[in-house]
Length: 496
Image (tube, rainbow, N blue to C red; front, side, top):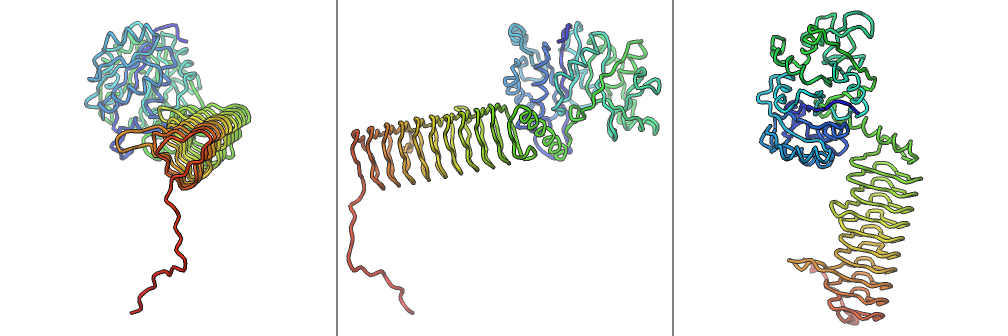
């Protein structure tokens, strides 16, 4: 960790015209999280004292979204949401809790990267280092930034650089000599570069670490005498050289860490890179993926030993898979804990949302099953095809194997719940609970009208509508009497 105070500036003011979307670019999602959320999450790992998000296009929407990102990253929202006014009390509390305080600075209009960082200066103290990140560069790793900060050491201007086979569009690192470690003398933007400079393959990533007291003076010297008429942050390099300050580079080889998103095509490309990295990490831990190219993790996924995951599965929110769990093809699982040895058959949809879903050890779920928020299943529970469970508890060994609905129900051990049966839990205004005690057998095509309790060991005959509590061990039948008319003739069509 850095031994000097660290402040992070995140540039997130751009419109993102090539995204062709009403949504601000930094709020588009990669791996289930907004691009900006990835960057704030990374900043939260650096033991920084403050992050200043520079907003512009869609500022109100971006700033509102940041409150959620901050909570997820364990940082404190220290701004008042009005565009750059620091909430001192909030930041003091954040520091007491060792959390990263989050502030905002508005850039209106957008006049370049240097102009953007100028807007953050009132929120930066001169005793530390400023780390500049981009809100549309989501995959930079905290370890990379720590290495960059070590190069800076609170004294030098440090740049994150990369050698690319095709550097088109990036600022070029100009060095004083042909040697790879020659002194850096300038960064030249693509549109201002000469033909010779455009042949340089070492590029500036857009990420730098700089002593704040020096940054403040250099930003005051910026001008917009360039091809784009903008105030370039990269011009501070030539000021550092002129002032005799060392400009150093931390070079990496992983292009994905500095890849920005400017179009849906680039977003999709980076999504595949991100997913393959997540898949590789899981496989290195022993998870067996049928095809890592057909795997999507959009949240936090933890797996026990000998987990198997088939193709086209999506994991969102927080999901844990216990030892020996098998997940069939084309499943969607979100906010759920799956117990050891459970089998999730193909095309199953599980989404716990805020309440979560719990699947007990050895349970069999699906195919084509749906577990909704509040479904809590014990060990060796069977939920079969086209069965939906919502806000219900099923004790060990309970079974609902076909075409059924269990909503707001408490189901005891070893209950057999028949095909086509439902709990009628909603009266048009309020939800009511159904209690099915242990060892009950519910026949096919039954309606249990809540609130109602089916006594332990009881049986409900097929086709029954049950509106009153039943005694333990009783056979309960609630249906119309069967009538058969002998020698009955069906109506015939009239011939015309």
